[in-house]
Image (cartoon, rainbow, N blue to C red; front, side, top):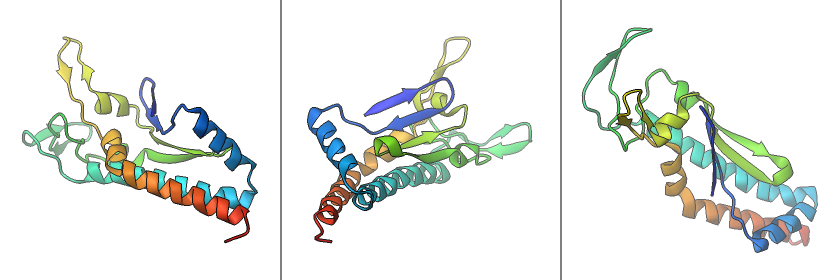
Length: 168
């Protein structure tokens, strides 16, 4: 699993560094477009599963230390305790979680484009050096669905080779 953590947005890219996987990907890329689409559909469903679970974890209310008041605009909020997904506030975080196709690589990327995604997912130190967070939302969604994703992709690969062989 490769994680790109840049200042602000975070991106989770599922990949495995292995010669066998590289050979399989090269075989899949050599298949006719219709057969490749079977794998692409499975990858898209997998990415959307992770994305939707991440958004759902934010929408579900996490344990909180109690109500607080935020300003600009003034509103009551219930900040989540560290170790739990952040609670829904204005919808910016949930609205910025995307599943992006990388067609040249036969891959999908699940990313959060909100500039404060990285500090939420991994935690941060304030100016005084105090540690805050983390409030993970992407990694738990990926881990929760790992087995299901493997099955979905394996099924898509099987359908692709069957289609290429003319059996489907």
